[in-house]
Every structure is written in structure tokens, then in C-alpha cells.
Length: 186
Image 1 (tube, rainbow, N blue to C red):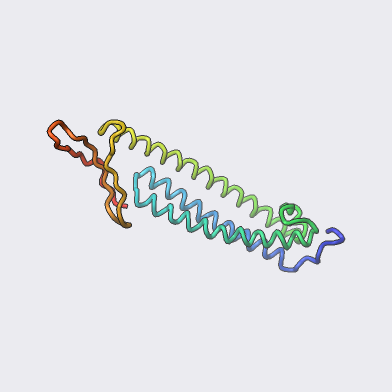
Image 2 (image 1 turned 180 degrees about the vertical axis):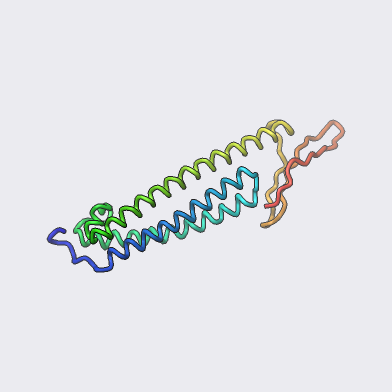
């Protein structure tokens, strides 16, 4: 500790461990939602994909609050160490704790990094699966209606409305044949 550092609040160690627990719980929920979304993508379950996306977004909002708490903890630790909050490392933080708490913090931090890496990998896989599905759909629509034609897609006017894609062109008789390709409910 530097000569200019403030005294360490007695609750910093327990607060850090509680924060890491909250981060781990959040990361587990996020991983679960991402894995479930991947299963829904593979099953071509549009409602499931969208439902899990909402869950992911909600968890990301909770994680923003956790980030605010993390910043407050780093600020407290930075004051105690006499360094700016962005310069506080895990090792410096654990140096402010008793040895047992420091070991627990290191273990939880490692677990958190592993979970977040897994979330990132699964999210990347989900994005690739979605690109693949959309490329297939684009190819199918192109085969059925020809390139450059208006596919007739109109988004639903309200949530829960029906989305329809209709393909067809105006023939010599002025008749516009229509083929229903998709009938999905949003």
C-alpha cells in the first residue's frame, strides 16, 4: 500500500466476493440463454430464437448494473492502493484481502473468465448458424422468384401479426400469380 492510500474498508473483500458471485450467476444465465437460443436456431424455432434473444437482452441489461458495481469496487480499491481504478489488477485487489479470500477471488475470477469465453464462443456459433439459415432462405427466395424482384415482404403492423412473403410477377395477361413461400408468426 502506498503512503497516500486510504485505509482499506473492512468490507472490500466480502464485497468483491459477493460481486464475483453475482457476476458468475449472471454469466451462467447468459450462457444458458445463448445455448437455448442455439438449440432454437437449429430447430428453426423462430419464436424460440426471439424469446431467447429477449432473455439475452435482459441479462445484458443486468450485466450493465453489475459493471457499475464493479467500477465502484475498483474505485474503492484504487483509493486503497493509491492508483486510478483502471490500474487495479486482480493481483493488486487480492493483496488487499486476507489470503483465503484472495484465493477464492482468484478462483471465481478464473471461472468467470471461462464462462464468458464460452458465452462468446456459443454466441459466435449462433451468429454463424443464423447467417447460414438466412443465406439458405435468400437462395430459396431467389430460386422461386428471380433476383431483383420485390418479394412482397411486408412486416407485421403489430406484434403477433403474420408475416407473409409472396413471390410472383405480372404476366402478359396482367394476372399476377402468387406463391406463398413463408407464413411465419412473429
